[in-house]
Image 1 (tube, rainbow, N blue to C red):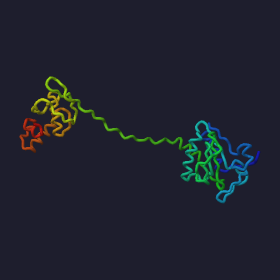
Image 2: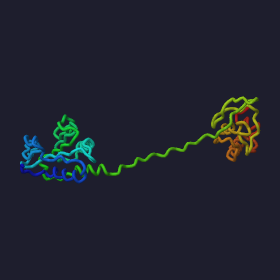
Image 3: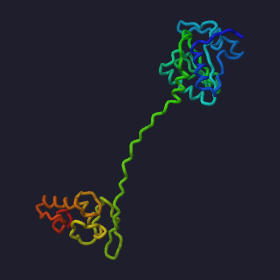
Image 4: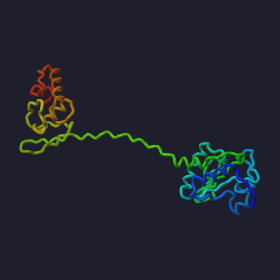
Length: 255
């Protein structure tokens, strides 16, 4: 077996992956026989020189993380790429997963990579052999942190209109359905309205008067409507009886 040591970020990645994602396979650092035939980051004789820094002989700079229970390579790839583009983890050199290569030297742009969806390959920068990396710990915290509960504004209560009987002509023929704020003139002659009058007794005249006065419509001649009538009568110089007689009806615009 070739003698080697792990760069500290690789060691951190291995330890944190095994701690936080114990059911997912850690695929190793030094790689297999195929890796050892080359001079990549899985070998102790990696030979890249970046930013004036060269790989140290005898040091391995890469780790492979396997897809498994609790660890989705696709989800991790998406999360880490967002972090890298935001300037975090300067120790990372490049990442390959899901046939996508993202390299620091090319601004993290998506390029064709050789590794499929089974694992994530992480390579680390020369010059960061002693850097403490918290990538897997941070990712675990991201997954387990309670998501903020979105506050939903309460809906305004729905106010159902007061049901009012259909207005009729002589003989019981329906001429229209009266609803709050509708301005339908009842068919029969205008009666005198006073405190206590109700639509179901007077065929829609209370609601008609409420609309004319601009008061809340409920089909009942109550104290609020009485006050509104008195205010109108006072403004028009009429006797303030609080009742709607023929004179007051004319003041309301009904003839």
